Amino acid sequence: MKINYFKLLILSAAVFSFSVVLSADEKPVIEKELLEKGLVDIQSIDASIKVDLKYSSKDNFLGEDAYGDMANCYLVKEVAIKLADAQKILGKIHPGYSLIVYDGVRPRRIQYRMWEIVKGTDKQKYVADPKSGSIHNYGCAVDLSILDENGKVLDMGTEFDYFGDLAQPRYEVKFLKEGKLTQKQVDNRKLLRKVMEQAGFGWILSEWWHFNGYQKKYVKEHYRIIE
Ligand SMILES: [Zn+2]
Image (cartoon, rainbow, N blue to C red; front, top):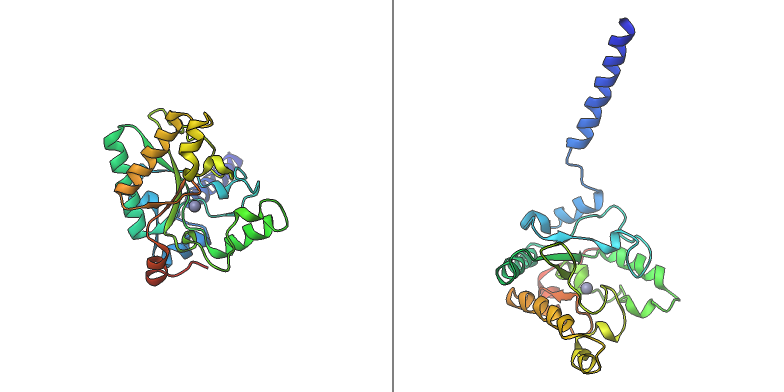
């Protein structure tokens, strides 16, 4: 009987300490740092936006987890609000559709880590030189796609992070004519650009998934780079 009580005590102590660990809102150090710098977790602005942080897994062109503990997507608040607007606009056009975000802020020390991984390989040209600083380093750029009502990612003609001409909006008309992109794939990209543009984002000619919350000049004047 005594032993049973003892076991019960140990068990309840273990359960208690486990539940304390679970309930404590302990964010990784890197995410706390981002919050202190005024950035926001985009899901705290709009919980319906899906997030699949590609660089926080090995499912990216590096084949390495560059983000480590960082598992959520952060942006400066003004850009996160624009993203929530884009999500609403998308929902009006296609009820059930959702944005899925692959990357937001990319602290510069992580950019250096990525730079080290690709240095001397054929992938080097696909990582921006950390010295100059990209709009992602400020938390003002976002990489994303669209999920349909069944949670399936729309066919954009290439995967995220496909670094070849087929991913470049500048060649869409050419690839459409040549049959290398279908009308549906181009229309899906156009839908993404439409909702992002209406929410105030700018798109670029080289990556269908990348959008800027502001132009670089404005970003440099109004925000600090996240080291
Ligand atoms: Zn990007």
